[in-house]
Image (cartoon, rainbow, N blue to C red):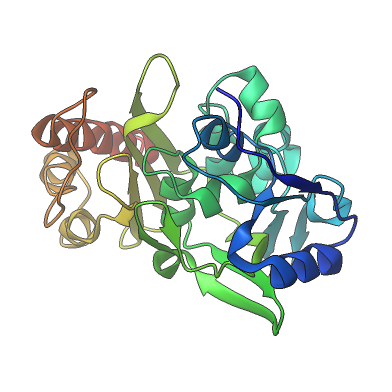
Length: 279
C-alpha cells in the first residue's frame, strides 16, 4: 500500500527542524531512521501532512564521554553503538543490546533516538535505558530539558516528549562489565516478546529493566528489592526472577499470551541476573 500524500521537508539544523515542528504542529512527523514511521504510513496508520526528515542534522550523531557520563546523540545508529569501542569498554550493555536489534539492515539505518521516541512496547532499547538509569535530553521551542528514563515511557507508543520537541541526546553512566541483556524474540521481526536488561553496580545496587511484556517498559522494582534483601546466590536470583512481573498487566497477542509473557520474563530475568552476577 502507498502512503497518503505528504510534503517532505529536510532541515539541516536542529533549530530548523524545531521551527518546522512548531509551525506545522500535529500535522508534522519526524523521520529519523524511518523503520517505524514509514511502515505505519504505508499502512495508513499514520497520515502526516508533513514529514520532517532530520537525517541531515549531523551534529545529532555521536558517541562521546563527558563528565563521567557517555553521551549518545539521538541520530546514532544501532550499528554505531554495536561497534563503538568506547561503549564496549565503558558501557557494555548498550553494544550488547544493539547487537540483538532486528537485522543488519535495520541496525545500519535505525537510530536509538527514533526507537526511544516511538516507544514500541517490543523494542529492545527501553530495557537497557531503564536499567542504566539514563537521562534523556529533549529540545523544544522553550529550550532543552532532561527527563529521567523512568519518567520517559508513559504508555503504549507514548513518551514524555511533546509533539514539538526533539530527542537530541541520551546520557548513560559508565558501568562495570557486570551487565546482561536476555530476550525471547519474535523470529520474523526480532522484536522482544520479553526482554530483560540487568546492570550490577555493587551487591546492593542491581537494576532490572523489562521490555516486551507490558504496554510500556518498566523497572522490575520487586525483583530488585528481593535481591537487595540478601546475598545474591542462585536461590536469591531465582526468587528475584520470579517477581519480575509483580503488579504488571502483561500484553497478549498472537505471539504470546499474558501468562506466557510473564513466564518468559522470569526465565530471561534469571538468565540475565545469573550472567551479570557471574554465577
